[in-house]
Image (cartoon, rainbow, N blue to C red; front, side, top):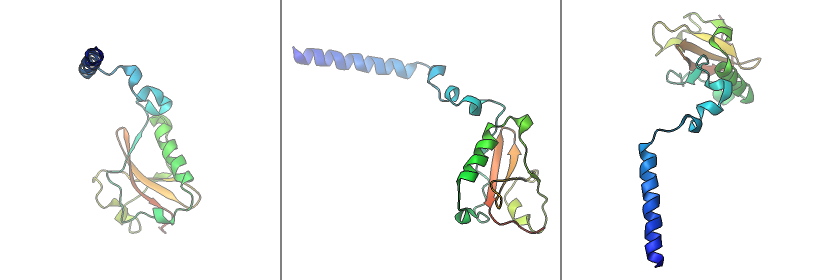
Amino acid sequence: MGDKWQNKIKEQKRQRELELKKSIIPPSATIASKLGEHALESNYRLIFKFYNHKQCELTQVENFKHIIDRFNYMTSKDFKYFRSRGKISDSRDYHNLFEGLPPDADLEEIEHSQEGRIFFFRLELFICIVTILVNHRST
């Protein structure tokens, strides 16, 4: 008699799993609703597709908290209110940061602490991180 009930329980469980696979995930189960302001359509998302590892100075960073704070700022600000330090020109000192970037990329920078900077460009909903520098380059 125990085997009969065990089989019935297994069959019901299998049926529920099949039903779940066929159903659409309800909005309440998605993580986006739990992210608050970070899930707004007018906020940027970070991507690292164009990250320039050859120019990276992360090994020299002493306190990563400043970088995390900057990334948080970048992804929690509405497009209209996001401010960077300014655009970077393709000059002699910064030319190697433009390697591998799309030709129409407008490179910008934002400070992550008193001595360091994050270089990026914007592409629709994305902030494409290019590199993180600790040392300032003379212009």
